[in-house]
Image (tube, rainbow, N blue to C red):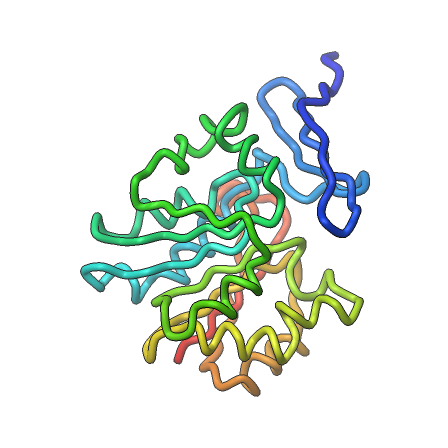
Length: 222
């Protein structure tokens, strides 16, 4: 049996240890020893892009923000559905994760960072939202394990009332906010409605038609 191989290790600005490991053809990114994502389960990330960009794909030159690069699957799915004149900004807090996507993770999602439509912002996605009033036709958030993973007040900057107000302000008048979550979260759904979004909730499998755990996509439209 092949052992797990450590490919890389880094830290977030908050001091969390992030590692990239490989076992055969599978890659896993972990935070403080807990699995965040696996290359074997990318279906729900692809669904995030499909639901979130349903309107943007009908615009000639849409602007889309992807919050959280991960292994590049959401970014790749976004690029596959939006038109050639699009601008897709990806905000990733950890610079090393960007390096991994330019290196060993690149082939998994067919090297999305090489697409000329992509602009990389090594920054907190909340800061990008704050600096971008009325800029985006779609905002796709795939940070941590979704809103229910956050338990401290500092995370109000993204998934709390203030964060949702930032996201709403960063959208165009017909924009869409889509949020990936590892599980259902009724309180977050209520916060979305309170922030002024028309909300629907999509439940998908991690491997789409091939099973895996169920994940939730919150879709908020203006």
